[in-house]
Image 1: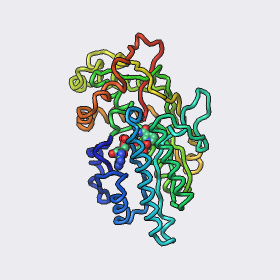
Image 2: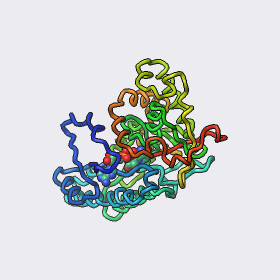
Image 3: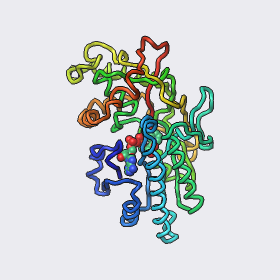
Image 4: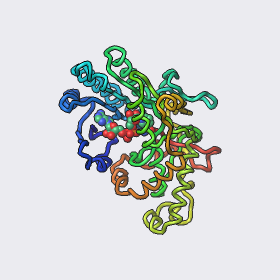
Length: 354
Ligand SMILES: NC(=O)c1ccc[n+]([C@@H]2O[C@H](COP(=O)([O-])OP(=O)(O)OC[C@H]3O[C@@H](n4cnc5c(N)ncnc54)[C@H](O)[C@@H]3O)[C@@H](O)[C@H]2O)c1
């Protein structure tokens, strides 16, 4: 399901459209009549709940829709799941599952030397996005404890990979480097994130569905913690190498510094830090490893190589999204007047997360 207002993009579903088991319904998870009808009429026994408003910057600028979708929308799905579960004979209830896709941002921010988040780390969300996801996690738990709905939750780190909306840090940096636009980096750039390739994330969710215990939560991480500025530089280096090696790419992106012997890093601009910006996230993935046999299959270097190649090969996918994006998400998450140049900043800095 997807509403017209969100970061969803129908073109991203094209590879699935050929699968006979796939069907697309254009609707809102907060529409209880539609959700109830779908769950009942299709005899659904497994719901994997990905739908969310997910961009932290948007949640700071306009929090209401985050509560509507992430909290009330999740509650609508839980009510439908409960009804569906209760309609099944007891023997079939064991096969029913509601899996909730959540985030490590519910745990708040770590200090430099704090241990990584475990499944027992107390919740301390700092952004409206994180607070809305924390609320939804609590509702999922409550529906299990109170009504016996068979649920599971995964709290994962920052995702990246193909088909990611170009307002998130990695695709934003890539397409801005190709188009010669500023690469906005929040604060001093030393906010650290654990990066998880989207296919590793989905494998982790599959493991929870297959082997996870009902009512339990599992942290899923990528196993690589990187300061945001270092991540932006890793992307810049990859863009430079690819354009240096390919005259057709240089011709396609004439505004990229790499298109005429320059360096993409010259586009980095430090911008005023995000309000309430969490300093560090890190996932302790030992529970998922021991109990589910889950480990990420890709290193960050492998995943970034694949991701850069995917964006270079799929301009037809991201260019229309750029053209239709709001201007503030094209070049900077903040007002341009808040930008500081690299020369004016003593340390390197970064930008947005999920
Ligand atoms: N991207 C990350 O780094 C990250 C990290 C941790 C957790 N997550 C979680 O993973 C899930 C997916 O995140 P994403 O990055 O793919 O987000 P996204 O914003 O790219 O996609 C969210 C999807 O939800 C759909 N959606 C939004 N509101 C809806 C509504 N009211 N009704 C129906 N559909 C709706 C959108 O159409 C879109 O397809 C979210 O629950 C998010 O909280 C993401």
